[in-house]
Image 1: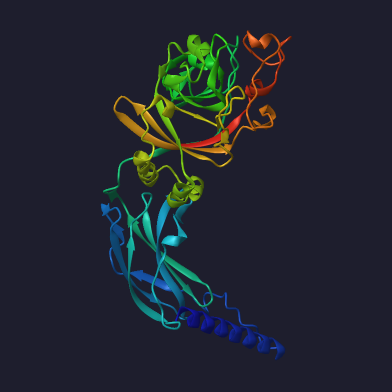
Image 2: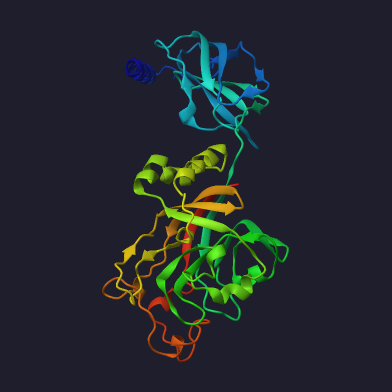
Length: 404
């Protein structure tokens, strides 16, 4: 029916064009269909309430009214509107509800139901378009919404982090992340250096992006390469960053658990579109809450996540690359008995290929002063900058969404 209607509409418009051509060829005056006095736009009259108080969220509202159109109606629909500095604006064209039409009526009584599904709804818009694409609009004002679910999320975009050197004198790398923010010099920061944390006056820290390799006594640990470490595990034996303890001694360190999101779950949750379109509202909160049955780990090993597993060239383990561009990581932030869920999207992973041997394992250091001295920074005399040491200061780019 709809295809037939638009075919008829196109044939009608073609007829008008032919009439105009004939009129011109006969030296007659060209018909101006944009003349609103001769071809006026539709007139919409709403007969239901034009202002609604305490509209219940996610419930249906019925808008009734009449339309007059001298030129013939092409379509009519209602949609949800939000308030902007320039007036009302459609929230999402996919939420439009059309009233079916037979041909191109000049008069119409309508009754259309629409669900108030968007938290920012400030009005219901009624739009009527005639065959000359002239549009008439009316609004039903929504003064307040009730029953809106609690919960929202914070979105951190364009986050860059990098592993800090070993026991640096002046640490500057964007090494630590805080979801709640840490006050440094009167300003709240989320991406922090060790120096920032040491000089902070308020807040707590959540995780680090570290270079796993060895501990403070130069003993090799089983893990190797860049990865994420929960704040309360930075100085642990499996992370090996005891050299950070003096900088972090005054900080409140939260627990964060990590788990890579499977390809199937990425698809079922629609994460690619979610990360492009989400606004951090209650729907974002509810989607993240679905991770409560996914990121359930409680072991210390769940508090760290490496880009490569089994990657140490000093071990006989089989290496596997598990974090690449576009990887999604589920996280659970645990403070006492309260859990908040979120997702880290690795937009740009660290390129660690210059550190690998022919077996795709990350090389260690066997020569130079760095065997038994700290790599405090780049270009130190007598230090061999090879293998794993090339990862210090290498940035990854992230986008993070977490429940508030």
